[in-house]
Length: 211
Ligand SMILES: [Ca+2]
Ligand SMILES: [Ca+2]
Image (cartoon, rainbow, N blue to C red; front, side, top):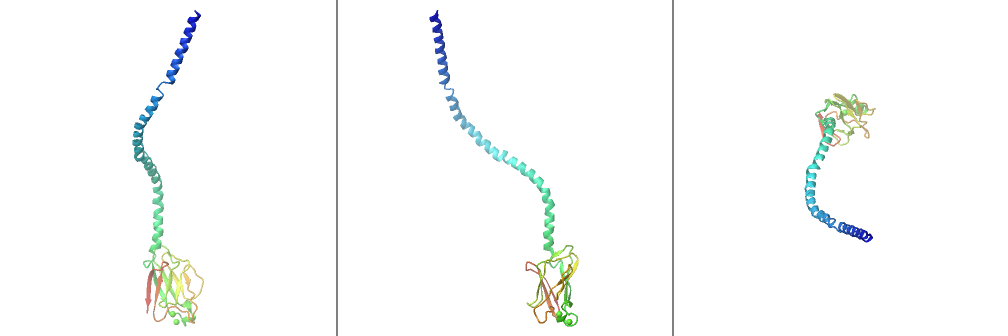
């Protein structure tokens, strides 16, 4: 009876040992590995396809969506700011002889011109509807000795400014050449001369001749 029980226990151990060796040694662990490598190839093929689709479609479409959304939010501000910038540049470009002209040149000062420099003056007109920046512009006569350099100065729209040959304090409508360095510092010849106005870029704005 005991032997029969021992035999049954031994048979149970043997059976349990065989099942353990079968489970541990089962090719089930190897066959999934083999399935991984062959399955890796078909997996790589869809990976090659899906990344291509993701780059061209999935990746590109969200960028387009984000760009479109960001552009849509930025475009209104561009439309608002760009006309202001264009208008600002346009004002600078339009200040040529279409705006600036000489409305008067008083070459013969009362009395002796050499002693009455501010009796000589030029009246400059801005006929445009916007201020003109004359900073860095120059006024010259026909001789090479006389040249006036505008300081920081805006000639207001539809306004006149007088440029006097003598010295004084500049205002919004009065500028002073303060010609000096010669026995006679008068600039404008009484018997005829030419005024040259050049902008800050060295381009001729206008010539004004009288006789
Ligand atoms: Ca005179
Ligand atoms: Ca003169």
